[in-house]
Amino acid sequence: MSNGYEEELRALVSEIIEIPPERLTLNADFIDDLNVDSLRAIEIVAAFEKKYRLVIPEEDIPKIRTLGKLIEYTKDLQ
Image (cartoon, rainbow, N blue to C red; front, side, top):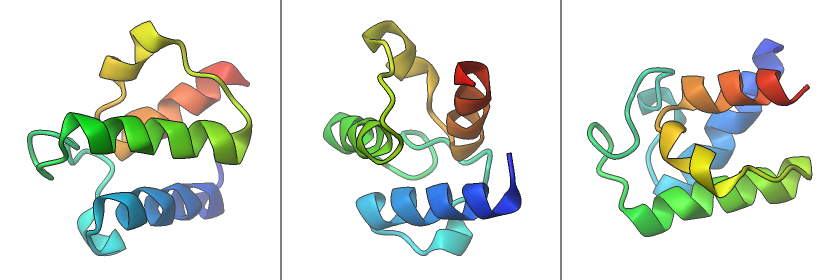
């Protein structure tokens, strides 16, 4: 994935969870490190699905806990 794509996703997620984009590293766990609750985690997935017109199967959602995993997951869909 291009760096522009990574920055686009970083901006999307940081807006939803209301933290500065520079604090959102590839390995920061949404729940453990950034204190994202389950409702916000679902909001991240929903925004991603809407923006990129993808459907993430429900059983895969718990696996996507970092920005890096979100990017990695997208590679698997292409």
